[in-house]
Image (cartoon, rainbow, N blue to C red; front, side, top):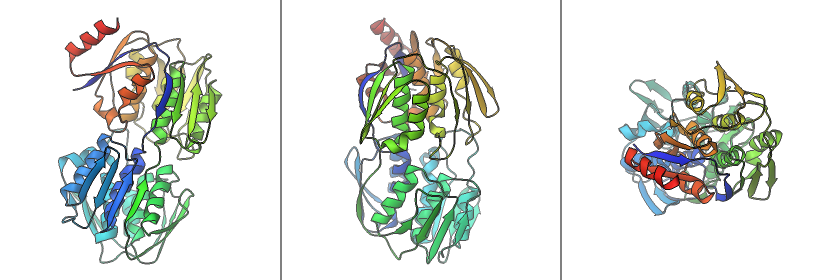
Amino acid sequence: MEQYAIKGGNPLVGEVEIGGAKNAALAILAASIMTDETVLIENMPDVRDTNVLLQAMESVGATIERLDRHTVRINGSTIHDVVFEGNYIKKIRASYYLLGALLGKYKRAEVVFPGGCNIGSRPIDQHIKGFRALGAKVDLGGMISAQADHLKGGHIYLDVVSVGATINIMMAAALAEGQTIIENAAKEPHVVDLANFLNSMGANIKGAGTDVIRIRGVEKLHKTEYSVIPDQIEAGTFMLAAAATKGDITVKNVIPKHLESITAKLMEIGCEVEESDDAVRVVSSKPLSHTQVKTLPYPGFPTDMQPQITVTLALSNGSSIVTESIFENRFKYVDELTKMGASIKVEGSTAIINGVSKYVGAHISAPDLRAGAALVIAALAADGISVVDDVFYIERGYEDFDAKLRMLGAQIEKVADEKEVKKFKLRVS
């Protein structure tokens, strides 16, 4: 099992280029097989989750051609099956996007229950509610099975704001008869990006980015060329890394509007933030102060940034409170952070944080994707050497994470075993 060996204590300084948004890319890849014509997708992140989804699509006959690391050409006319049951597809949450895509195109689909990080209950009841409102019959056995003689537009009010359900219903409705209205829809940037992608293929979707999305079904979709938006969460992770390490990082290739909730909190705790058209610079030159954070659906503070801000606030002056309102299992990393000297008490969905002056190096484990990245930030800010286990979680959503950090001056290496950890310690001591 690969690990990161990290010597902390250096401020991160320099420029970092942000890749395509993982969450947008997964939805767009699934939707790309909804036409029989060839689709070209650019700015696709080369991360484990996107590669697993491409492998799954190829397994049922889709033609996948990688033109380079971030560009893929896809043709769905060669699909011979609508059943996805390989073990590898169970590893990612986005497997369920294939339901909406295939149900829309073929009026039937069967997909294994989704996997992904264990950060709490993530039911698919709103997805099922949406499919049934469009006229599909949905069965839950060992697999999720959906089928319909034909799909007809419906009026769907989501009981909770769900990104996954909004995306899945939008895909199926794009090829349904008549108009579909989704109320209480998710407004995240990747929902908007998928709508733009589908519209570029000939879909008729209006209102994405608001809480009411209207979709008028079309008979078929056609070829397109499309570039995925920059990754809001990767950008936010580097912004918080600048804050925690007392650094100065310019995060390039971003959409600053997508980062407003993160920028606001950084300024609140004492960082300087400069925005330009497609870059954000974060400077952390003075002691950080405490604040309160509550995760909320977009445009609120993202749940995927909660571990990173908690790691930073645990190095700030005074007491901070972080409330997690999206996933109930998202504080599993706190035990690992405590090993490094953090003073955090978790009560239900709230973390009460008393800031400490520094972290100390420790041997820690990444419990999930975003918490793993946050623990790397903690290790970079710590005195001494840390080893982070289970970095495969981090690689699910961050491309070349260690290499990008090294370009900012971090002393971090991916190592395979204890022998390599010892070599790293000798080199950096």
